[in-house]
Structures are given as structure tokens and as C-alpha cells.
Amino acid sequence: MAVTISDIAKKAGVSQATVSRVLNNSGYVKQETREKILKIIKELNYTPSAIARSLSTNKTNTIGVIVPDINNPFFGEIIKGISEVADKHNLNIILCDTDERMEKELKALQLLKEQRIQGIIITPTSVEDEFNSEYLNTLENLGIPIVLVDGHVKYSTFNGVFVDNIKGAYEGVEAFIKAGHRKIAIITGRMNSKPAKDRLIGYKKALARNHIPIDEKYIFYGDYKQESGYDFTKHILKMEDRPTAIFVCSNMMTLGCIKALYEEKLSIPEDIAIIGFDRVDVLNIVGMNISFIDGPTIEMGRIGMEMLINALKNKKNRMINKITLIPKLVLKGSENYIKQ
Image (cartoon, rainbow, N blue to C red; front, side):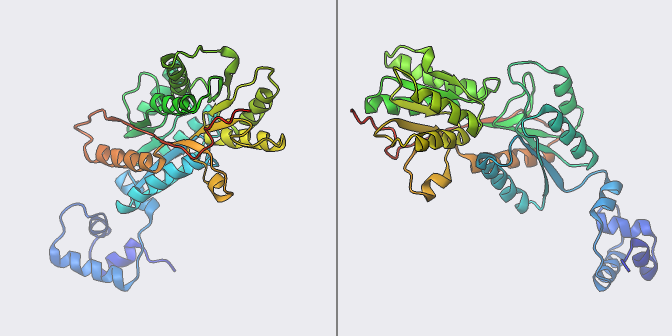
């Protein structure tokens, strides 16, 4: 039979409230009484219920993490960074996956609220360029610290950690240009998200600064999913005046792009050059040397968690903190221009 606070109180000859104060380290208890209770707790091998404790203290040692696609290794690395810091501070994590659906995100927020979590780290599904007052109110009315990771909420004042997507895309496209390419296609991410918009800005900026006209027929609007990378690459390969290089704006779309090239029995970069945004570890495993923009994903998770911990410690003196990390261009040869 499970040991209860009542059992401990009876054996110690004190009230249940006194035992509760010792367990929660709150309120005054004589040192002699405290030591006696702790000794009995150890003897009875008592483990306090996290649920019961949350009901009595109105909070838990748990934080919520909400991501749009748990199957994407990009978010897996962010979660790894969050977990590393959370473990050091004895914090538990409840992880929610929204499948990039607003209704699932709102459901996740309600679930986390019911769990009395201390704070939330979230990559929002919200449409960045549209103001959604109901969504913003939902977040603000939670009454707990919120940290954004690689995603924005318009008009919000939440802390956040982001990547300089303009710089990353600019350097990737410029690497193509330095290799000799002039006809460079781009497969963008979902264009209602700021990262996708910024990567397109970086692409156009690199072309303009190198006096290369921007050709709309080489711009393909994807959605971060593998299928869009695959479909657009198939389309690109059928173009009469097809590009010599493709800048792919997400890891999953890069996989789709490579799948399409493999099916057409084309070689990289002999037939067409590729640079992807974000690392794809599986490509290294199979020996494919694909150049990429390396976003510091694990570091984003660590910094986001540290931001949340600081916010929890300084609730009264809240300062808005937004950090932008610089991605790194990793060239492995797939950007080269092999003239036919």
C-alpha cells in the first residue's frame, strides 16, 4: 500500500500541514521536527506525488515545448538543446506536436495550462504576417513566461531566439555565384513564415549585389515538406531553360530534391548543383557531400531554455530579450559548376 502524508504525520506526531511544509520547503518548521519528519520519510520510502504537489502549490517543475513537426530532425535538435538545460535545472518537459495546425496548437496550449506548467517554449504555427488577436490573447492570458524559437508572433513581446536567415541564404546563393552559376533556382519554405520570407530576401539580395537579374520563373514556393522539394525539382528538371543550381530552403525539402534527382539518374553537381538550408545528417551517413547552411539548432534550444529559466526567476523585472544567431555555410562540393 502506498505511503501517504497522513501516515507520515501520524508516525511523527505532527499535523499533515507540517509534513506538507517540509515536503514543499515552505513555511516555518522547527529544525528538530523537520529532521524527524525527513527521517521518517526516508524510512517509509515515501515518494511525493507530482500531481498532488502541483495542486497544493499551484505549479509544477514542468515546462511545455510545442513544435510544428516532431518528425523533422531540425526540431529534434532544438528539443535536445532544451532538454540538456532543463535536466540541469531539474525541470521536466511535456512535448506537444502541432502538425503545423492551429487547432492542434490551441489544444496543446489548453492541455499545458491544465498541467500547471511553469512556462512554454514554442515554435508557433501562427501566420506571421497576419495579426491574430484571439491567438495572441490566448498566449498572453496563460500568465506564464513564453519563449519563441525560430518563429514569430506578430505584435507580441515574448522573448525569443532566432537565426539570421537573410545572411544564411545570402551566403549560400553567393557560393553558387562564386562557383560560376548564373541561373539559380530557389525552393522556398512556407511564405507565411518569417524564416521563409527572410531566406527569399537573402536569395534576391545575393543576385542583385552580383548584378544577376531576378527571374521569377526560378522561384518556387514550397512548404518545408519533403513532397514539395520533390515535386518542384521534378518540374525544374523539365524546364527548357533549366537552372544549373537549386537553393533548397529546408532540410526536408532537400531530401525531396535529392530523391527526384536520384530517380532521374542525375548526379550532383555534375548535372545540377545543390545547397540546402539546415544540416541533413542522413546524407553524411550515406556518403553524399551536400553543401548546406548550418543553423545552430541545438544552441537555439539551449538558449531558449536559459531564457525561460531567467524569465521564471525574474518575473517581476521582465525584460524583452530577442537573440539572433548566425548560421554557418558548410561547403562540401555540391555547389560547384561543372560545365557541360
